[in-house]
Structures are given as C-alpha cells and as structure tokens.
Image (cartoon, rainbow, N blue to C red):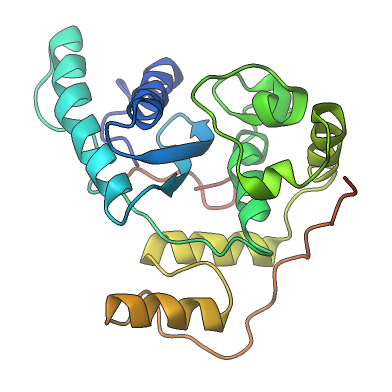
Length: 229
C-alpha cells in the first residue's frame, strides 16, 4: 500500500495501519495470518496468509473504510489517504518466502533510514530475529522450521540477514510486486493461472535467475528505486 500524502504518511501513522490489519487478522474478522509488517515513510509492506480466497482483499478494504475517515478527522483533511489500490501478489513458499521476509525487513536499511534492521521500530524484524513479543505477528511454518527452539530459530533467522539481497533478486521481487506477477518458478505461476483462469503479470517466461536457496536449519508513492520500493 502506498501513501498519497507525505505529510500524513509518517511512520507512526503507518504503524497504526499495521496494527489495524493485525487486529482484524487476529480477531478472525477477515481470516488470515500476518507474518511480516514493514511500515515505511511512504508505503507499507504486509506479508500475509489468507484463511480463504478473498480474505486479504476484504481485510484491506475494511481497513480503508475504518482508517481513512479516522485520519481525515484527526488531521482536518479530506480525500483519500492512499495513492491508489493496494498491490498484491502470491508468493511461492519453498525458496521464496523467507527471501520476502528479508526483502521487507531490510528495506529501511536499503533506504538509509537505519544501519541495522533491529534499529527500525516499525518492523517485525525484532519479533522474528530477537523474540520481541508482538501479538499481531503469527509465525509461518517455514519460519518455525528454522529451528526446534526459539533461540535456535532466531539465531538462524538472524544469519539470513548477514548479507544484503542480490540486485537481481531485488529486481525480480519489485517487478513481480509492481505487475501482480506471482513470485515463484514457472510451475507455480502456471498453477496460479490455471486456478484463476487468466494470465497474470508480465509475460516473460524462460529461465529467470533463481533466488538464492534458503539454508535448511537443523532443528502507493514510490521511494528511490535504488533504495527500495
């Protein structure tokens, strides 16, 4: 989701948006699990698993109905808060999901907002990497598979952030996000298209550069494209 007003879309307000989405997910009002929150200066990233087909769309539509009037009343403004309709795309779990974790939680570092991801307060990094309690965040099964215990799992997660994402990986994620293309391999995309009965996203096929293999552990305004979406 991208903010329409730079004056209004500050980090504290975007944190409230993340909280609203989390509350609706936790309450079962819309049906879904929130895994990642990234509230940035001009936009928000959410990584969610829907409980049913249209759950995420319904959640974000409800958010607009509840949150935008509140902001307008609070700040004496009128009109929409968002640049446009939210963008969404499906993500293949195996080989791609944890890369999206890193993409979102490293965004403030790429943008030069902080030196380390744990320095940024409006992100789920401290929950996933350090065990800081956040009732809004639900761990994905692939995150839980990083280790048998919490400390092992958190250490394994922190190790994923030892290096920045490759520029080619960043480019692929951004292209999929901007076009609504499923992020995954050709088989995954074909499955999505067969389920929907339509072509989705950009038409390029072939052999795109693969995302780095994730280690197996034991147990809408846009920012500068060089710094992050």
